[in-house]
Image 1 (cartoon, rainbow, N blue to C red):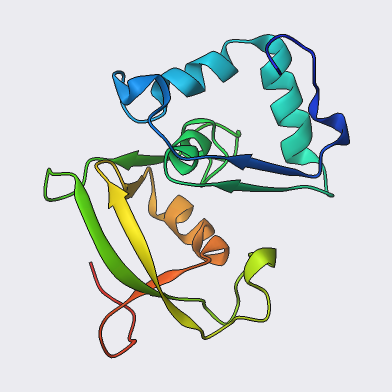
Image 2 (tube, rainbow, N blue to C red):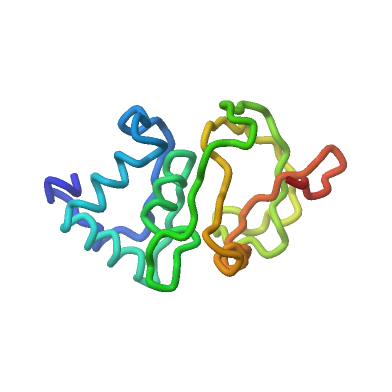
Length: 160
C-alpha cells in the first residue's frame, strides 16, 4: 500500500515490521524487503518522517528486526546509516529452541511497562540472529534499547 501510495504513514503512530521470510530470504534475511523500501523514494521518505516523529513507536519481529537493522533503525551510525547487522548464528545453523528471557528494570518497551523483572519463556527460531556492531560505540548506544535479556536456569543473564 505504501508503494502504490494508497496509504501513507502520516496518520499512524505505530509501525510493526512482522516476521516471515520476505522474498524467501534468497538475498539474505530481509535484504530484498529492505531494497524494496530503500529504493522507492516515496516509501523511504515516509519511513524517515515516521522514524523522526516524537509521537511514534516501532517494533521489528524476527525478519522485521533484521529489516530495521538494514534500514539503519537499530544501532545506526551518526549519519543515520546502518551500523548494525544481524548475521549468521555462530553455530552456522538454523537455531530453534524455547528460551527464557527477563524484562530488565529499565525497559524502553511500552508494551512491557509494569512487567520489569518478569521471566517468561519464548520461542526463538532464526538462522541470522546474531547482532554484529560496526563499532563498540554503536554497541554501547543500543544498550538502552534492550527490551528482553536471555537468562539461564537460575534467571541470571546468559553470556555469549
